[in-house]
Picture 1: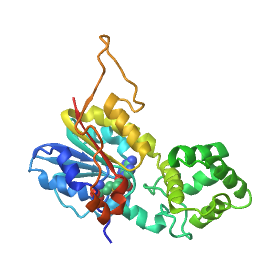
Picture 2 (picture 1 turned 45 degrees about the horizontal axis):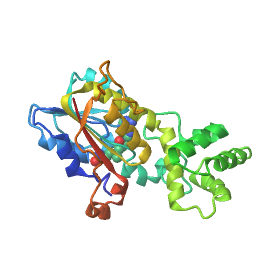
Picture 3 (picture 1 turned 45 degrees about the vertical axis):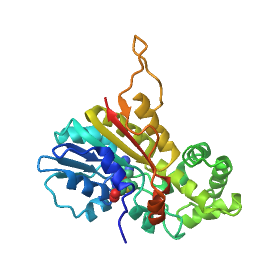
Picture 4 (picture 1 turned 180 degrees about the vertical axis):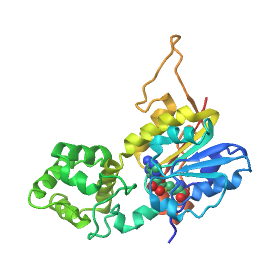
Length: 300
Ligand SMILES: C[S@@+](CC[C@H](N)C(=O)[O-])C[C@H]1O[C@@H](n2cnc3c(N)ncnc32)[C@H](O)[C@@H]1O
């Protein structure tokens, strides 16, 4: 099975505007689909620094190329590692957010609700302590409701949190099946859509996805050279809102900042004013691409 099918590959490569001697960063290496194409556009003087916090990504990467540097770390440390590898400023940064097909399809990782016997894990970095078992068994009712509501946009977040807290008084929730059996008591006819939103919410919390995205974007603005490209592909509205705010205003809250003369501070020029989305052919071949939204901006 393919590790991961790269989404909007041509669109991303075009958006990066690759110069053969430039320095580029792929903060989400995954199966290396985008990275391989970036490498093929680079000449001998070019460099590509890639990040992935999942050791599986590193293990399956069969690229031998002197232009490539692999950083087995969270992209929240973007600036620190680029500094260490002496490659600031950079010409372009690509982020293809979320989990890979490999992470999702490997049921032992606990990201999917397909196999009820599996442990609720959901860590991209298996060296990290916090996993889904810890979130579901240790968070208080309000914290759980917030996770379900803000990260899964579930309307019955409070009811579900209450049911989980009640159930775990008699037994810990360890497996996918344990969680589904509680959900069943409060949600009639659990749809796949509902479960996908619930699992997304827990996954986002386990991996701190919103916080690390914000940190990475702020760092990206600091390490890109003027004219450098920031290319971000997101898969749900929470991520996309943060990316849009940052590209438009230079801060993740979307606050308009003016100088003393009233001029609006704009650190980026938007290359695509609206998001770019995959065409019908790509979606038919790769259903995971369905929710992808690409934003491209150039550092001023
Ligand atoms: C959607 S996949 C990227 C797929 C890749 N573009 C390709 O074509 O094969 C996302 C990858 O980024 C990694 N990832 C997600 N968030 C990360 C973070 N904060 N730091 C480092 N890696 C991260 C995941 O482990 C996963 O392997």
